[in-house]
Amino acid sequence: MSRSSVKEADIYSNSDDLSEAAAGFMTDLAVRSISERGRFVIALAGGSSPRRLYQALADPSWRDRINWGRWHFFISDERVVPLSDPNSNFGMAEKTLLSKVPVRPEQVHLVPTEAGDPDTVARAYEADIRQFFGVGDTEMPRFDAVLLGMGSDGHTASLFPGKPALEEKERLVAPSPPGVLPPPVERVTFTYPLINSARAVIFLLAGADKQAAFRSVRDGVPLEGTPVVPAARVHPESGVLRWFVDSTAIGS
Image (cartoon, rainbow, N blue to C red; front, side, top):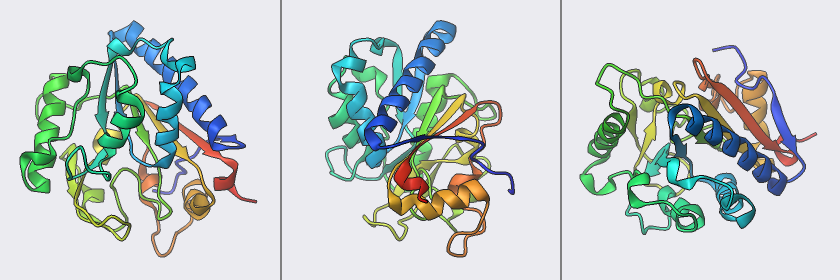
């Protein structure tokens, strides 16, 4: 895919400003979604940049003006570990956001990591997603927003360079074996069909270690032998793609 995934990026001088701007954008999306469809369905993400966003949203300056009772939370990728494990993405979101805002248990749609092997876990989570949206096996659920980060290797969610999940066309959630990045645990991930069906996809990117990967996405250049990094294949079919990037990830 030769076209750039970055038509334009919002650049911020630091991660705090980035988080505040992303919180405002997400809140506006939620207001519109609730007005039009009665709810706001978002897939969260793991990582340091989303963590800072969650902390911003949990601050009273944002928390007290959000209609949390209409939000529903999924997650775009998860490690197959218990929720209490320090490596759990949902566990991080629980500590930094979900435990600090007024949401009911039925609004938080956990990955059933105890369901069995990664393939079984992925199929169970896909079934949960389809049931929530009320769609059959041939229909595509549509999230109001999918939140993503990007690693220094260009991966997003748990779509890693060279892994089978990149080519998945039918499943919404797929297993993702351990990559080169720590910790070496099994994962499950949203696939491109599900991500690209979203009404909005939001990338959060901060840190100098992301410069080469961001350049690869923006300019369409290879990264360490990977012609097209996974994040560059995110193109919402009929939705908005928004990048929030801090100045250190841009470089000189």
